[in-house]
Length: 224
Image (tube, rainbow, N blue to C red; front, side, top):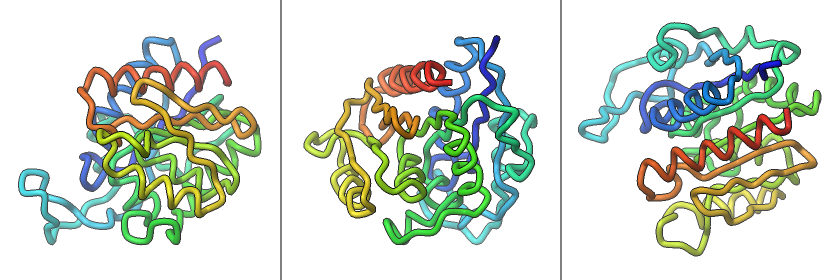
């Protein structure tokens, strides 16, 4: 039977939403594995809107669910409608929207708060012992919600991962274990059924990031 997977988005665009290449890679690999997919996003305002050409915030206001619908080709549901019993696994692509809209990590690091709907959904899948896949910056959600879990956001002693040392240290300060992994690798926390990979936390060619996300998807489905 096809695995049923929920994918949670955080907007559309790397600087204020979901990273588009990561979201697409997740969906392509799930399709290739024959999974049945439904896409969700919280119906909330973005923290802010970034002009992706200038790399600077604007005065514009946008909604996370409405923006995520761009990536979902309109086929998306409010995160509040997600029922854990209808799915075998859940995956969160990365992008700054995770750290700005799904939680406040971008401004508060380890002292951040996690959106209540996101927290509830994560706890529901964890409670049912169903696998959770996270890539790029999204593993910080697990680190914040599940103290003691194991995750990776890449390698802290490799110049291709400039932002990893600080993020890994913050994860450790939350009482979690950061495992150094390369862009084409995942870390599987067997106890908590959490699968993580670094994706664009590594300055790697797009095909390497695509392949690493593929490994994450496969590992999630093996646990489902």
